[in-house]
Length: 268
Ligand SMILES: O=C[C@H](O)COP(=O)(O)O
Image (tube, rainbow, N blue to C red):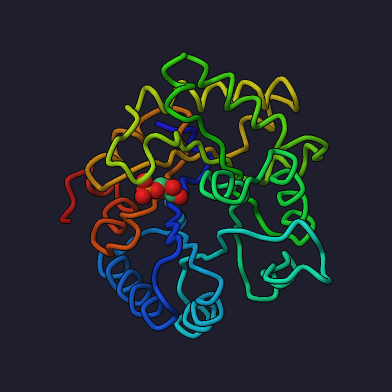
């Protein structure tokens, strides 16, 4: 099991799905489902990452119903303000009550050519705004087949965290998402996830300190489902999941959040 001092986090990345009306429906249903099962949010934290256009509605619902579900954004600008058409600043996300912001999701790296330097700048802006970046790393299939996956991900971490202060790094979240397992139905084995995540934690220890390495939560992402979450979460260095497709299905995502209860045989 993961270190008990690190609270597991299950984050649902809705990607470009659900308009603000649909978002409210899904979130309401998720909240009811988890409440009905008496989910302990202190024991397993739950967050959703909707499209920008949904965030205000999500904020209103979370505040109005005093939900314990946290929320955040899928991307952020590396700039503070100004002539950057289409971009959203970290300060704007802070004003909307966001807790988390993804930085460097593989789809941003692939379709928007985000480099480690850009991811680094975005993570720094998120931290400056008092929010928590979820810094994403992961290898493509060719790198995995050439056995370069740990080195590749550790190098991405070096670039993405360059120049950040240890006390800031301590707060952030990292997500390891093998690109070949995203949206493909291919799940890395729990041991595959553990190997890379342990490598990342080792690098945090070398670069920062053992205490920083012990504090940072590192998630696994890539075709996670209710049926696979328990095995992944049983690995000592895995502290949660970044869930794409399954986060759009309330019963699946609630099941992932309740992996501990389901392991103990409580009703599903
Ligand atoms: O951000 C989430 C990941 O890209 C995983 O997506 P997926 O669960 O649909 O494979």
